[in-house]
Each structure stands twice: as C-alpha cells, then as structure tokens.
Image (cartoon, rainbow, N blue to C red; front, side):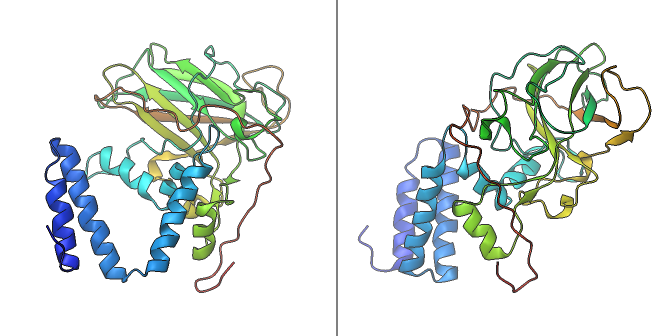
Length: 319
C-alpha cells in the first residue's frame, strides 16, 4: 500500500500483521500496533519526544546485566508486572490470590536447605525470624513435596547479588514441603529498600515526585508438577511504605504479621533477646508448572553500590 495519510499508515501495518500465521502472536501484534499508533495520535507525540522514548528503551536494555534487570524494574514501576499477575491469577470477581511479582532478583540454584535450617550464609545484621509457611491447594488441602525457593534483601537493603560483602546465595534457600504442606526456616528480619534509580526508571520516578522504596518482604517461589508455578512476596505489616510501594505489589492477602518475642525461648537455643515469628498460608492451583528464565544469573562485581532514597513529594512539587 502506498501511504497517503496517517490512517493509511496504520492500515498498512495492520495488513502486514494480519499475515502472521500464529493466531496468538497475530492478536498481540495487532493490538500493540493499534494502541501504539493511537498513543502517538492522542498525545500528539513530537519527533523529539519520540527520540527520547527510543533512548529510554535502549538505555533500559543497555543497563540490564547478569545481576540487574532494568526492563523488569521498569515494568514493575509502571504497574505492568502487578497487572499481569492479577490478570492471570485468582478469579476476576474475587480478591486474595497469594500470587505476586517475581521481581528482578530471583536466581536459580538456591542451596537446598533442610527443614528448620537457616538461609543466613554470612554474617548478616538483623533480628532472627523463624518462618513457617503452609502450601495448600484450592480445597485447603496440604500440598506435600513442593519445592519452595525463598530469598530476600538484608536489613541493609541489599540482595546478595548486589552486594560483594555477602556470601554467594546469602539469604536464599530451597525447601521441600512435608506431609502437612509445611516449610520452616530461619532468617533475619528484612527491611524495606530503595530500588536503583541510576537509569531510566529513576528518571521516571523523579519526574513523578515518587519515592523509590519497596516495603520489607520475603520472596517465595512454589513449584510442583501439575500445579501452576507461583511467585509470591510476603510483606511486613509494620513497614511504612505498604500503601506507596514503588512496584505496586502489596495486596491484602500478602501482608504478613511479624510477631515479636521478648524474654521467651526461641526455636534455636543460640538466640538471645528479641526474635520474631512469621506464619502464612499460600494457595496454589492446577496449571502450568514451567519455570520462567531467571531475570538475573549471577553476582555483581566491584564495590557495594550506594543506596539512593528519594522522597515522596507533594503533588506539583519536583525532586
């Protein structure tokens, strides 16, 4: 088709998309073209703005490495990751799925750890936490033999892959549910942390006057053949950023209750002083048990990066 005007252009692109043999890919491409072209028209996108957007996309790819995924970070900061999760988990007329964001820090190969074992693999500050998690099916019955991968940031706000001061795979471990569908492990209480803001995601957040904090959480990956693989995050009820999570991940079904204990015996006799217990139930459903490719594959080299914390401004103010 010889293009005479902007509407001809959209029709020409859609005509070529319609040649795509795979029906699902054809639908995705056609919808993407329609929405992208309409976005350009609705916003009256200038040529300079178009070049700027292309630069942002390119920079996100350039900043994605074995230990950092700027693209996943951007999807989370725009709420796309959370929307995809909610769209694909739970029933449309219900709330409360225990599925949540995969996040940009899952690594394969976490050390297999016995029930009740610790995932603290190098000196790590923080109060001890003893976690008990139950895995249930849609009927409330225990799911035994499921692999449960767990990981979280330190009290300093770093995942081990970001931090050369932590041992490889610190605060990561893999467990298997027992006959009651239960896993138990020891760790340290995580803290909230700022997401990196040295790239396009940081520029986006600054432009909106947002903070870059994630509330404290522990990640869970639950996997068993015959069940849909579930990523989840269990958030701390005492975190001040639950309602303004920079990644829009907090749901009411995943706010966990850390219970503080003082002057009582902990499950491990070496613990003195304050410690916490955390209990939660996750529900998995039949479905695709495939594992996605991990967003990171290794540990960063060089010095520990500095953490930059942005303030949440009042509407109309700039950072």
